[in-house]
Length: 377
Image (cartoon, rainbow, N blue to C red):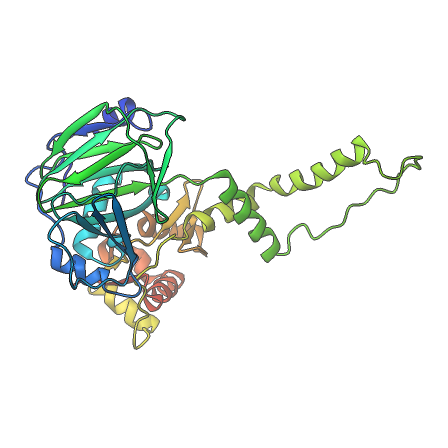
C-alpha cells in the first residue's frame, strides 16, 4: 500500500486548482510499482495506449503504440503508457492513495520511462495531475497560469508552447510529488534514467456533457414531441421568427433538463464510462448463481477490475452506475451497491446477510461473468 505523508484536507484547501506545488517525500520509501520491462511489455500490446517520444536536436519524433524498442538511441527519449492502472495490479494500488478525491473525477494513471534528457517539451494540460517521481531523478519547471503563451509546432502530435519563466524550478527524487492544476505550463526532463507516475483528474467539459445528454435523449426516445402552437398569429413578414416563438422553442429544449430523475440516471451512466480501454475478460466458463453463493459463503474475496468506474447517489444508494450501465437492487440491499462503488474488494464478511439475497447473488454473478469483478488471488 502507498500511504501519503501529507494532510489531504490541508492540501485541498491551499492548493487544489489554485496553485502548483512540490511535496517533498509525499510518499515515504517509494518503490516503483512496475518495472521498466513490465511497462515496455504493456507498451507493446495492441489494446494499450502508448507513445514513444524522442528529441533529436531541434527535431521531435513521436510514435504511437504498439511500440517496439529496436534501434532506440542512448538518451533523450521516453515512452509513455496511459491508463496503466487498467492493466497492472501493482500500478493500480498507487491510485488508491488518492481516493480522498471524488472517483468520478479520476481519469487514469500515466507512467513514463525516460532516459537522460527525455521529456515531451513545455506544454499545458487541462486537468489536475499528481506526478510522483519513481526511480531516478527528474528536473521540473512550472510557470504561472496565463492566456498569453504561444504554441510552438515542433511536431503535429505534440502541443508544445514556447518558453516560460518558472515559478517552480526543482529536481524531484523518489517519493516526491509535483501537483499541477489545469492551465499551468510545465516542462520536465530526466536527469538520469527514471520513472514517473502521473495520476490525472479530469473534469468534464460543457460540450461533452451536452453532447452526451443529447445522445442519451435520442437513444431513449425522450422528448420526441413536435412544436405545437394552436394560437399561431397571422403576420405580414413571413420570414420573421417572433420572440414568443423563439421563447417557445427554447422552453422546449429547457424542458428536457427539467427531469431530475432523468438527469441523475444519465449523469450516473455518463460518469461511469471509462475514457480508456478496460482489461475486461469475461469469466470462462460462466459462473452460476450457486457458485457465487458458495464463493461468498466460503468468505472468498472479489477484486474490482482496475480502472472500472462505479458510482451511486447517497440519496438512492440501492441504484448504482457501473461501467456506463444502471444496476438496481431492492432498497434493503443498499449496502451492497455502496460496497461495490466505494471499495476495491468485496467478501462474504462485507456482504453479511446479503450473501443470501437472491437479487444480490444474481447481480454479482452478472458482474463476475462480465469481468468487472474477479476472484482475488
